[in-house]
Amino acid sequence: MLKVRLRPSAEGRVRARHPWIFDQSIREQNREGERSEFAVVYDRNNEFLAIGLYDPDSHLRIRVLQHGKPASIDRQWWRTRLEDAVARRATLLDEHTNAFRWIHGENDGWPALVLDRYAHTLVLKLYSSAWLPRLAELSSLIVEVLQPRSLVLRLSRNIQEIARKEFDLMDGQTLTGPKVTEPVAFIESGLRFEADVVRGQKTGFFLDQRENRQRVEKLAAGRHVLNAFSFSGGFSVYAVRGGASSVTDLDISAHALENARRNFRLNPELRSCGHETVQADAFEWLAQNREREFDLIILDPPSLAKREQERAGALRAYRKLAENAIAHLRKGGILVACSCSAHVSAEEFFGTVRESAIASTRKFQELCTTGHPADHPATFPEAHYLKAIYLEF
Image 1 (cartoon, one colour):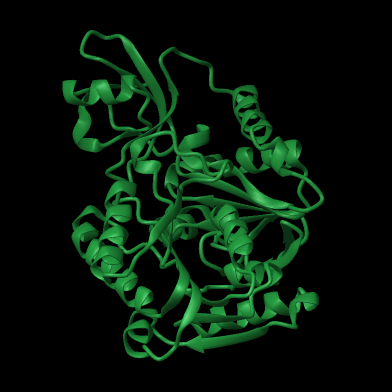
Image 2 (cartoon, rainbow, N blue to C red):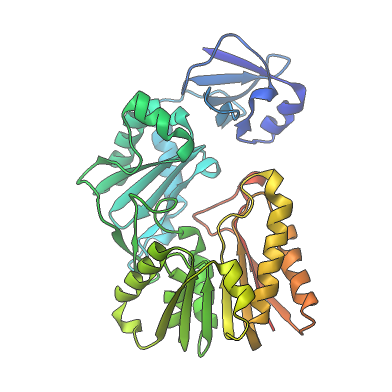
């Protein structure tokens, strides 16, 4: 058994149930660890702290599975943990929504692993090579408990080469069931969408923004809406059902805009509203097209700070985006500004958007701020990535 002792500075974090142990936190271990084996973690007094998956390919060396007291991690242990994650989402499954997240990584006790549902297709995304030797066991358990029609594997870029060379696994391959080659249709809040689960970003759709899309729908009646960084047009489809006068999807990707048009075609009852698509860099377009005015603007950019060193630049970018978007708002208009950058805290992001509003010298009121939906829980500091703020001018 691989035994690991930590430096004193790391012991407190593990006792506080933090799920990550970095290589520099390890004081000693009894031998070299192998990928995916269980590492038993002790403190300086030889007291048990945790058990985790060992990952020699990452500076994040141990991903904790069990804190506090020893456990026999066998198939029944895995099954119980999967069933617990599913039970926590029982109320999300109804005739109006059949797409959501079954497992949200460390926050559900499955570090570096995500499992999303799109109707009868499940998408398993792995962010650590520590899971690769356990994939057959893992996929059989998922099929046994959840019984999907198909199970698709997605791999983060950092492990794709290891997966291909050592395990003959490819990003986007179908692990079980009929091979998935086309986008998968699903329902969210009674609306129809498609997710490109084989080639799309993340697992094919941004399920974490469901509740913000619902809020936008309630605000959209009679408004001309701009959806910047629109991706596949989710906010726009909701806005049209909410009674928007027009919607404009703005994205740099032609592929994303075509996905948005396809999602509108899936909801033919919404065609009475004008739907415009603009292929452009959202930063540049907002800065240059000041003659275009809107009543509701959604800013939902990709992560602008993927590492701590990018945090300051991200805050500057968020400020510029908010300032330029506010300039496009008519009187009574609403700005919905979102961030998915884990390295930018909610306090920093909200403060930056508020400062942009103050700098505009326009009167405004803050309607609300939002965070993670129920199927994307955040149980440790680094997990808090999603936030949004609503301001009316």
